[in-house]
Length: 288
Image (cartoon, rainbow, N blue to C red; front, side):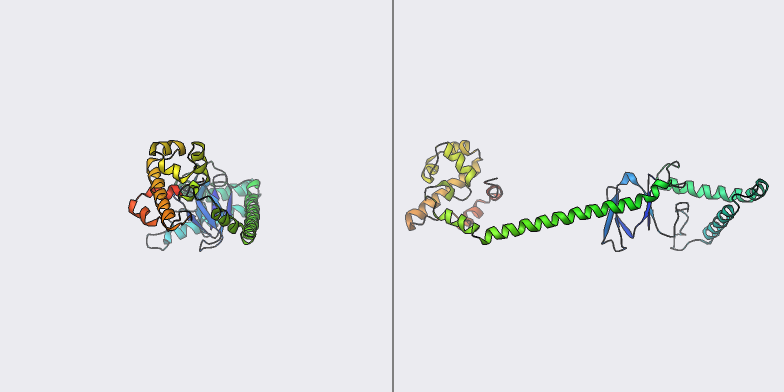
C-alpha cells in the first residue's frame, strides 16, 4: 500500500488501521501487528493499494461485484499508451510534436477528468503538491526522515525500559534487605493508644488529629463527631467509621489484651454491613 499526505509526501506501508478521529495508524505488515507510524486526519489524503495510482478513478474501479469493468480496463490501457507516447516524443522537433499532440489531446483530457474526480473524492484541493502533480525533490526524502525519527523514538523507549528495569531491581534489593520487615517492626512497637492503630488513620490524618489535641485512641473515642471532622478535615461518614473501629479496638484491648492495630480482616464484616462505597476508596488514599 502507499500513503499520500497533503504536503505531497508519499511512502509505502504494509497495512493501516483507521481511527475514529479520522487519522490512521500505519503498520509494516498486513496483519497490523508491527506499528511504524501515525498520520493525523488533517495531514492524510488517502491510502491506496499498490495497483491503484493517484490518477485512477476510485469510483469506477469496481463494477459492484468485486470485478473491474472491461470499459475501465480499456480506458486505463488507452491512458497508459498515450503517456508512453508522450514520454518517447519529448524533445522532438516542433512539427513532429504538433502532429502527435493532436492525437493525444483527447486522451490527456480524459486523464485530467479522472484526476480531478479522484481529487474531489479524496476531499483535497487540486493545487496540493503531490496529489495531481509531481512532488518536488524535497518530498522524496520525507519517508527516510520519518523512518529515522521512528528509529530515534524506539531508542528512547528502549532507554526508558532500561531505567524501569534498574528501578525494579533497586526496589527488590530494598525489600530483600528487610525494608518491609522494618516497617512491620515499627508497627509492633507502636503505642497501643496511637490513633494510627485504627484502620483508616494513617500518618497524615494522625498528624492533623495530634495538632487538634486528639493524640490517643481514647481521645478519639471521646471527641465529638464535629470535632473530629474539623480536626482531620474529613466527612461525617469517615468520622463514623473511625469511631466505630475505635470502639471495637478498645473492646478487644479490654477483653483479650490484644494491642494489635486494626486490620482489614478485623473490620471486614462491619464495613460490609455499613455498605459505604466511599470508605474503601478513601482508606486507599489516607496518606496521599
